Amino acid sequence: MTKHPVVIAGFVLAMFAVAGTALVSFTHQATKARIASNERQALLRSLTTLVPAASIDNDIISDVMTVSDPELLGSENTTVYRGRSGGQPVAVVLTPVVPNGYSGPIKLLVAVRYDGTLGGVRIISHKETPGLGDKIEESRSDWIYSFTGKSLNNPPKAQWGVKKDGGVFDQFTGATITPRSIVAAVKKSLLYVQQHQQQLYDRTPLQEATPGENNDG
Image (cartoon, rainbow, N blue to C red; front, top):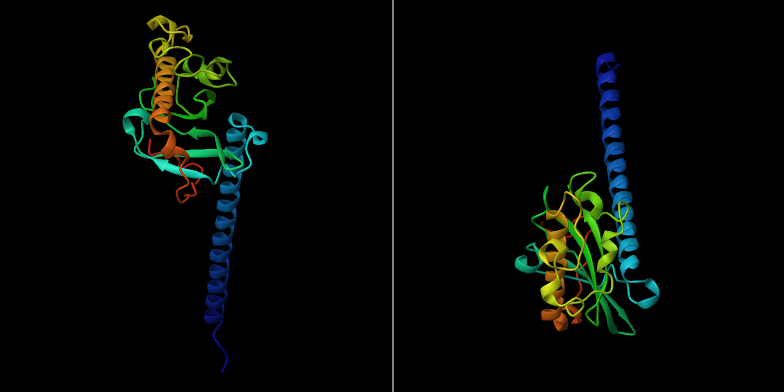
């Protein structure tokens, strides 16, 4: 029995549709995996900038826990990456959110060494005004480097503010809210680490974090 040409054409079109759908699905999954890999590598580069790879011997991107303290960390869920050497604590990197940036939330990486000093601070994302508040980016100015080596003792807690408020950190011309908010957030991160140091380095079951989903901020 000879099949009608319309039936044959319909069958061929259906096969093309199935093949096309499979190809799109495969491409989507491959792209998703590549993006995840790229995000992981970018995160690892940021982490090892703040906690040098030579100073630790664990996989810092996998030695991770989630904590919750919206008052000090600005988010319901904050990811903490932990660096160790020979099983001993070296530093933690928190991912707090600055909820009160001038143009919206600002996401940070804050590295705190085991001795309580800052390994450094970096900006993950922000929506601050170009030419003003965006000077928080390391590509725009060296302001963000001013935190490195600081602690709750240096400067004293009372001086953790911008100079306009009697503190030691510079503000930007025409943009005080942004640096003021970040200084406050970094200080709060230091306070959190000071209050929870044992918990942060406790060898609890580890939880893998997905880059890009660090905060509920």
